[in-house]
Image (cartoon, rainbow, N blue to C red; front, side):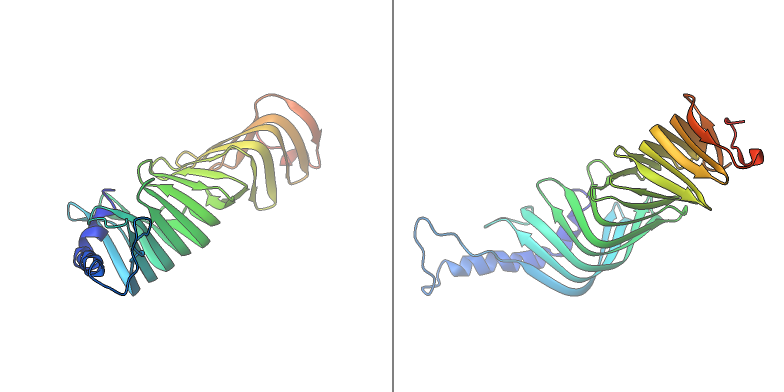
Amino acid sequence: MRRILPILITFAALLGLIRLFRLAQQFDPSLERNSGSQAPEVSIRLSDATLVSRDEGRPRWTLHSDRIELHPEAYGGLDSIRSVEFSGIRDGVLYREGEREAFFSARHAAFEQATQRFDIRGGIKLSTRKGDRMEAEQCIWSEREDFVRLPQGGTGFFNGYSLKTPLLLYEPKKRVAQCPQGGEAKRNGQSIRAAAILWDVNSGHVHFTGPVSGERGGLSFTVQSLFMDAKKHTLKANNGIASLRIGDENDLPEGFR
């Protein structure tokens, strides 16, 4: 709620008009009313707008949207916004401690007050100033947890590798990616597939748990678990090799020689 509050303050005057409109409805003889009827929903729509969210004077995030709609609760006050919807999002910037941290764009996003959660959909592209990137069709971001979920999967780009997965969980502050349903990492002809992946982007340490299989140069392997240093581009099998096909011995990664 703290991060969305600056938006609500920005639109305070407009929301006041909503309350005035609803008050006037009570005296409109053209409207049928009975004990079981409900007042029609009133929303505010803005076109081609830029929003800036601040906390104690520091920017938290900014975005430009082709259309923004605010949906209040029935007969609610300024603190009773039910949801906010954004369409055509571009030039989005996320800040941490006043500094630019990430840049994003998407086709649509919705913020739900009850869950304090953003549901972002359609052509999502996110990049950070440290070089991490993600592409997906759906992204769930909880302000309360500061945690990113890609429930429909997507592709992440970390430490020079691409990581394709059906489910990605990412902690922006720690730069840790989790793939509990597995995935495939690729780089320069090297491919590693695993049932589960834990990727610490800061250190470059990646833990693949089995079964794990992949190819590297003339080497094809299957192991129960695998450790990779993504910065040094080295591999080490943790629980023994189940199968191994060698082309050139010099192609063998560390841990297999």
